[in-house]
Image 1: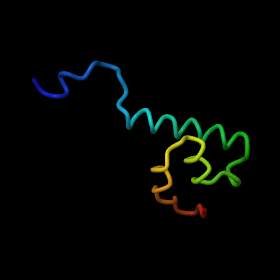
Image 2: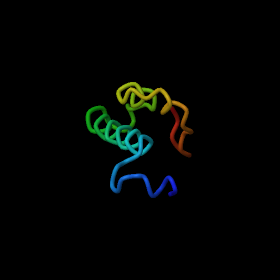
Image 3: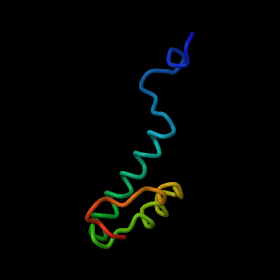
Image 4: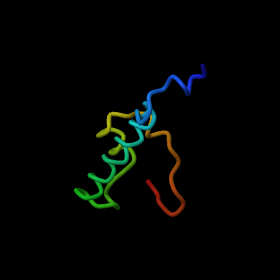
Length: 63
């Protein structure tokens, strides 16, 4: 039996959960502070995810 066959259906993986938490946190901070005043560092700190600070910056957006 493969690993995929053992995984229950519709159960998000840890990486999917982390991605969702970071996205939800970013959206909340954008609403509260505005896009221009929200940093990746703030999003990572609020989400409790230090790995989020390792992402690259999108073209046209400076930190």
